[in-house]
Length: 385
Image (cartoon, rainbow, N blue to C red; front, side, top):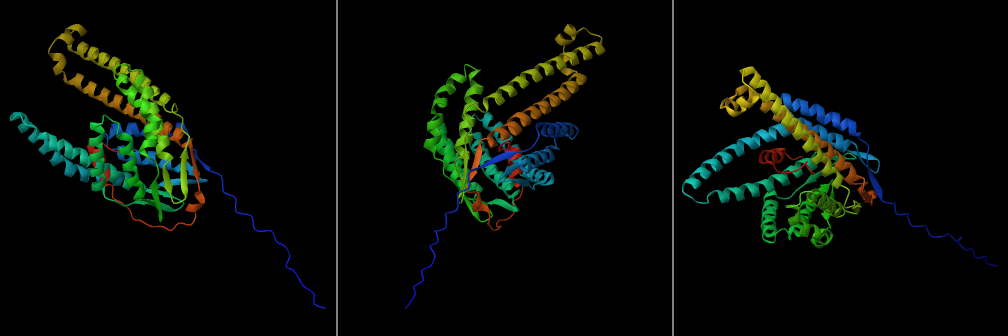
């Protein structure tokens, strides 16, 4: 008699649970960052501004090192010396261009022509090129879990696209701005990589427009009613940040943001408040300096102010120059604390990352980029952090 054996009934394996979205955390202290920028402002004063390259590097290192994704912090490997060299090389290229612009501008004024318009257009296109190259430099100096980000693509193609979209935005009085931003972000993210993991941008211009069209209608009113401007601009930047972050993808890694529209308005009002306070202090300093120089010359304050010596006084010009430099550096401290560190923290507090496991087994790829793009951006006063 044959005995039949049946395999034991084994339930099918349960599918692996999908990990929940991971919040992005920031661990840096506000006081530490304030001490960093305060000390940096003092060194900028002593070095006549040249320390800013090392200060910028230190600020990035602080923010990167205290930004944690899935428990791991990012790392910024750039150096201040790289930024200085990039700036000096860019300056050697830009100074002759600036000189040529000045001379052609004088001749154009003499012959009542508009020869400077092509030069202005060139500077705009070149500025967009600098923005792209500066971003490429920052990415190649950003490392997470031992792998660096990197970037390909052409800065000139990006500059051409940005210029054409900019022209369309000007013609449409800003209505095309959401589609311009979306198109440029798609180009940048398509050429952005984390190791071998390629990025992409899924945000759409129509989505951006739907979220902020009402701000476009209120903008002309803000030119006449100043208190509205910080509300409108703060709301616009919050909408832009949320839309931009929610469109970032690296393979199956997704970024989402829940930043409310009102999240950044208070920061801009605080900066405005500090501008008023520092402006009053600077005005009082100028008045005291004028009174001091007048007393040294033996004249009364009113007589000194009405005389021609007021405009020609070297001691007064020196004191005013020192005061202005301190005022500018103090404003930089305020902007860096509120609109860099505090804004960074508020934006990161709204971010969640899904599918982070897709970045677990990624191979390293990509090379380093030079800091020349940062130098061009600094020399043209364009670009970002």
